[in-house]
Image (cartoon, rainbow, N blue to C red; front, top):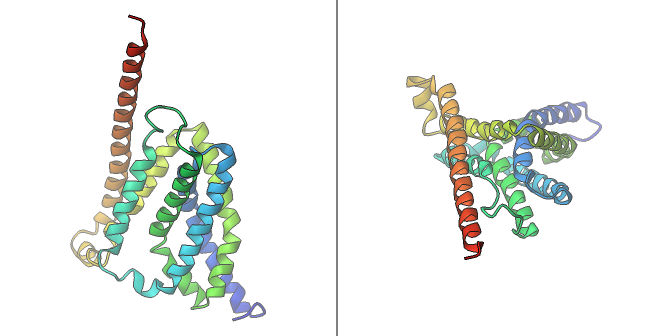
Length: 241
């Protein structure tokens, strides 16, 4: 297909629609990963995170038809998402300062975006590959058009998180929900779940979302208590004898 072929544009619109639907999840991940960066570094984090995620998604399209048939792949991906979701709920460094090197923080945000987006894209690359009908040009074109939408969405989510902190828990819970869905649709679990426990298709995502939120909150409270203890000990040691 070439640009003069109407089928090219029909397929391109299908891919763009798929990417826009996925943009909500991607925006949540980008916003969560970049929310602690200094303002001047957020755009860099967003740009390179999205760039890396899109590059990997294009590569995944090559393997889309066989990728999700690999046993245990989704289960491993689900564990990664659970870890990422919990990690994103933890507070900043125990000292409460920003002594962490900014470049390290930026790289960490980019790595989180790329890993989470890759895991969350395992199901979706098949839809993109199907719409593209094997044409990589279509895939790249659709992704390029979708990038501004994803980036804009991530900035909107970050503004919401700064104004309404509860959205941070909603975002982390969303990662847990996706992880739960992946555990019951892996090639080694799907047939049994469909036959004997169809209710797990909604029950498991609910449970894993709660696991992320509750575990993340518990660890955050522990970290905050530990920080307060360190501050009290420091203040006591600085008092004149």
